Image (cartoon, rainbow, N blue to C red):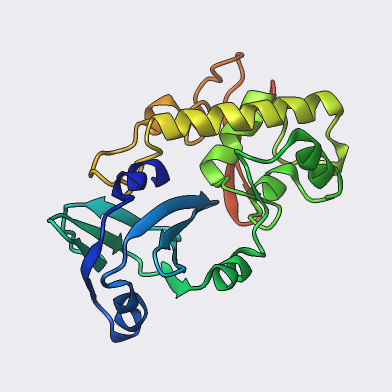
Length: 250
């Protein structure tokens, strides 16, 4: 999503609408400001504005941005000078919006771990080996590594041939390298395919993601493993579903 939003860099926000007074009280301060940059940190999106202000948006489970499109679940609409607008839609209304200085936004993000696509292997290895929890739980813990959700954790572990219930501190050096490599491959492929649209997700242009058509293991319960003759199983780990092959994931 961040890549698509970077097309807005240089645009000036002429007006803003929000469905709730509290949200409007926050975002109305961006009127007249120019977008200087857009960055992603995990699922968080940070808009850098002129005047040394930053707008942090966490979409949570159902939040999404749409460019030049209205939506029945819209919460905020940013209008741009010269035409065009950006809609923030959030069906379940869990999304969070914060406006502030660089330090304020930095403090909001302090609890997040390094981004999964920028973390070094050395840091990744040290983090995982310091945890006794199940590897799937560790990969999804945003305070350890940010940017890996439930679907991608399953896909990464299948690709690396690692059982989701393995203790993180029991993972071998070779397995760690496999997980790290799989993490990069899976996440980059998902970005290229615009994410997953199993439910509501759309990119900013309103297009569905396509990664769901390339799933390796997630949601394939009782289907044949794409790598061996095993059948995919589904279990619960930390109240979330986990899909894996009992034959080739040790």
